[in-house]
Length: 588
Image 1 (cartoon, rainbow, N blue to C red):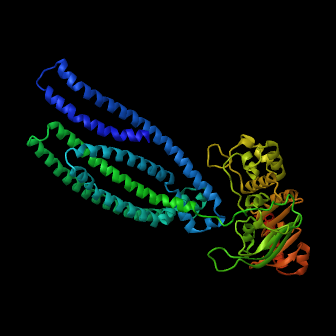
Image 2: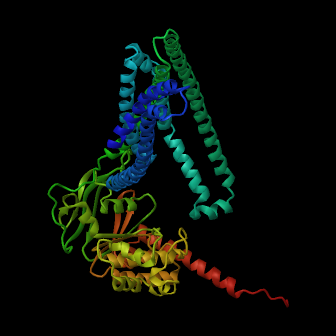
Image 3: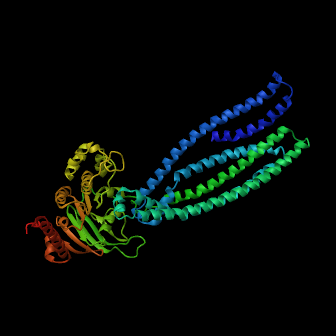
């Protein structure tokens, strides 16, 4: 603030010295080089030099301040967005409207914030300079400062108009720009590279990207044309007004009313004043524009989550004694009219392994989201030891749970940190990490890596080592061991494993699930049959329940699916055996 205020005064101080220097030079002209003539111009020139040096010092200081502000604001705004992105409900990520709001908030939010701050600072500096210039011009006539301000109005009007048009265009094309990001992701991401090449649809996505870019580029160029034409008209109007004022001053000099120094001062003051007014109004326009765009950030930050902790939460049980109960649960996804669960009831006994099998769309994945409290039921309740989930602190409830998803996330960090992420709130303990890795069967593989547990995993960063799908799942299992959660949820955990690895994994899983409550979502009956209780789910309801032998004896849906899967496995084994043993006899 101090630097801006002083910088705002320096141009006026410099201009106020101009007539003294000019008049001293006129007076000294023809008197020769003497001490008296030099002394007449030495003081104003010295003062002018001091003002210039001070201006350069303040400019350098201001550059340092702007850089520091830029870093601090960027970190602060990014922190706000990250915090809000984690705080909002999981369900928000499943809607296009939320993703549009997130993209608008992220789009240059820190840059807009810095620009708003700098525009406000420039507004202060230019205001101080303009007031000083107006004070100088007042001595030549009260109408001159008014003309100075009026000359910049056309530019300000058009600047405000074009800023509004650009903002509306940006809002309208948010989804289009997200499409561009998606096409770019498809064409450059390693996870999709194999299919892009195999099915040869790179040209299709490249064409889609270029067509969309072409349309957005054309619209942007049209905005630039409008902006250029308006700016040219505004400049011409300002030049006409400035020329008229300068002609009047020239007439006053010719009449002998004003001196040549006065003309030089007026020319500089009016010319700079006009430029300052234009900058001043430009600052207002930038504040208006950046305020519009920052409205997107504040709109995003105003989103309130619905999955929240109660004001006076009940402590979560230190050990689960009864289990989890779904009682008359009804649930439909927001925006959908069709219920996924309708008067749904289910009991998950404490310390038991419960498998849930069923066809796609039966509602199995929805159970996981409800158990993790990513969503709340529309009606009914989910209870832990007889207490509604909504009575607990959300974070404390989720600390009781670990989930092994069908496709575990390959975190691009060290092997040790990958496991430690299972319980990041605890201190990093290498011995416990290795115990967890040994329990999951990934320990030997990690030891063979170049730097052991300190090896970088994934190919995103230098010197990274990738793992197979089954090895990533074992690493996820190690993360679950390290978390030591009381409730274990598995979503098709062995989908990337061969039968031998699956058998070993199942043995290790039973060790992990010992004395804990486990829920297994699976299509594999070889995994389901290991459970204490099996529930068959169809169309959002439990249609059969029991252990493996009981369900086979029932000869219902489970038994039919079991026989179909076993026959398919048997036929595959027979076909493989015939293919290996039937060698053509070339002597016949």
